[in-house]
Image 1 (cartoon, rainbow, N blue to C red):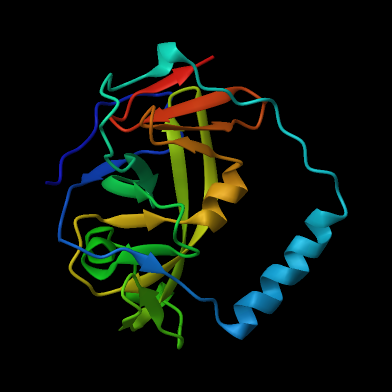
Image 2: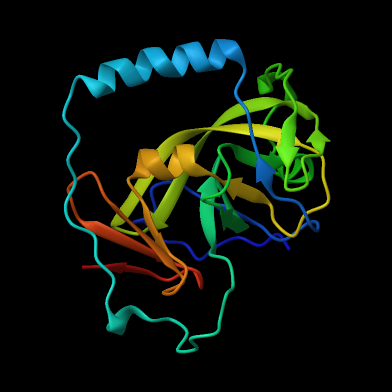
Length: 207
């Protein structure tokens, strides 16, 4: 499904829609040695500065599904490269941020922006999935007056999957996100300290 979102002057970027495209993969990832060296240099600077963020809490009022037996994954919508992309899996078990190749092709990002990535990803069963490269894309979580935009480093792979994009620990840690599968939501601080709530049904709230 590809459909334009409602016009809203408060949105951080213009966005268009990308729906579900495939079936069945989520996995772990590894970084190339050059990328690891770069991240270590960036992180070293960040480590010199104390990191703080406001308290993030979940309460009974925040339950989206009042079913103690529900075990659905947290799947949200994000704005990636000016497109509203549905079926974004929040996967705390993955060390990599993954975009599936068929999703990438729908974003109209020039293929010349794809950079070489030589190391394979490892899936749930330890199988190797070779990447087509990686790409840096601006990604916005939340909408309206409360949101965060990050430059996310996506590894591009071809695989059967139920999702368009997989967001792993690296971006979740950058966001300072806390994920509650019980509440079917994730929360993180906006730049002004406001806590943004992104729910699995794509509702955002301000507290």
